Image 1 (cartoon, rainbow, N blue to C red):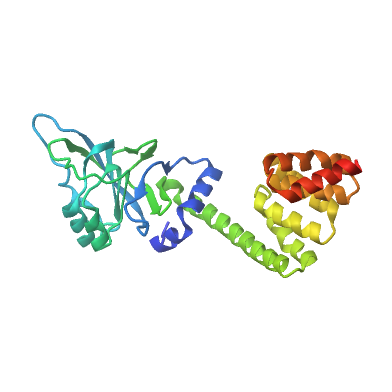
Image 2 (spheres, one colour):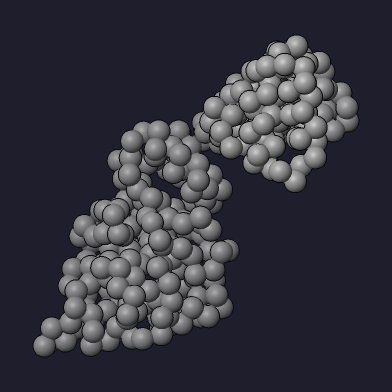
Length: 304
């Protein structure tokens, strides 16, 4: 698949991760973060496997001239945090050679140099202690690990401020297509939410229900959308629909005091004070400082 790295980076690791979840592909590298939040990368893996140094000694960095332009150096240092396998010399050389970045199952040092030259590094942290005479590279372009994630040479790595995803090269196109579908759907959801909230704030409650209902249909698990839609239904006197939205929120979040309160109020408006007592009582118990919660609880108790 031909691709523009910046287009893939723009998709973001969140959308790619959601796509991988949808397709049943593991690949989210836990605990590996950018040295600077502005760092991003995208490219195929050039892998390096390290082991503890033996009596003969060894090198951690004689491979850099072999890394193709745009490739991502992936170093498996077994997650060690006590010594580094990447420093300023490798950073400068990587930048000169237009290497796509470095991802380390371990730590790096001289991070100021990476910021200075704009070379993206992702690792488990930074630590100044050298890996010289402590670890050595024993294999290149072999299967390695980023914690629980396996990386095979040529696998695609994408990184941004949320972390790193590793996508098997044979499934890269499939993941990108799914991620674009997810991002398109979320764009529609965001657009509908913005439209609905603007109408809600402007007091056009009936019209606000249309885009908010559309957003809810696209993402029925999002409680914040259901709360906004429920509020719009309530303010437009569509009490049964408001009840249904707030009841759905309470089913997912039984301690959501706002949803409990709104559910109780909707039931009161529907002439069902006996049913309203339970959610209103729970809301008042969760937030005893809320005077309005107590008032409506008492109203329901008197009317029941």
